[in-house]
Length: 356
Image (cartoon, rainbow, N blue to C red; front, top):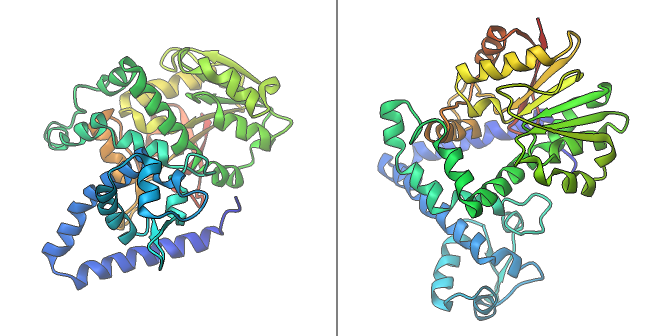
């Protein structure tokens, strides 16, 4: 998928923020606040549509309400009421003949979409995840994640179905920015690229497809990389990517030219991250580079994905999102120098560092 120019993306982001601010000024405060609060109801309506498979049912063309109710096994009148809300927000559309049809937003709900959010929405819509957000006030009062720093990951690991849902959601989220990241950074100049905490290997596979002369090492916990051989083979890079397992708190593969940590740093507090970075520093040759992929918090008061995820980290992991200065200082305390902060057209940014 071709990426738009970065200046255009930034201009559109500014205009969206300005229009949202104008909207808030043009309506009474209580109306603006009610709109914010009821957005949670809309989120659950979208999650219901994802679970019912409405977008998949409309993939081949428009359908009447009766046809759609049969296709998704729903009560016809209740489905009409759900669609009434969702069409008013452009998730689906209704034509002049009263048939429901797909939209660009609906295509992102399909299971076969190139950029599908269905698995993300299904996980965030679970009773488990919503229940943890109901305890946000506890996290704000204590400054600690619900149940302790490891509780979230422990609970996800204990429930096989929930764990599978979480893994699918994280894979989908990770794929949203892949093209933008690959366009913004020259991975091909490195002989050996090590993906730390890389899951089943989708990101390292996409890197290697862009860097045909490079080799990769995928590193994650044993239970996480269990499905990696199949994934790497499916993406055509199994012959150029080895798999190693372990904990990045203890040791990581040595001798790489580039070490990539994507969406790892924000999961942990500064003390734990310093431990991880020092382990990496020990394993890295002096000429190697470290590349962090994170949602770098901006210095403005407009909405930004990182501000939502920051609260997600507060509730669930004890981690946090950080601005560029905080990343620079965190790296410095762990034996690294921040060389470059590379903006992309996606919310994810790149932070390139070198060992001191």
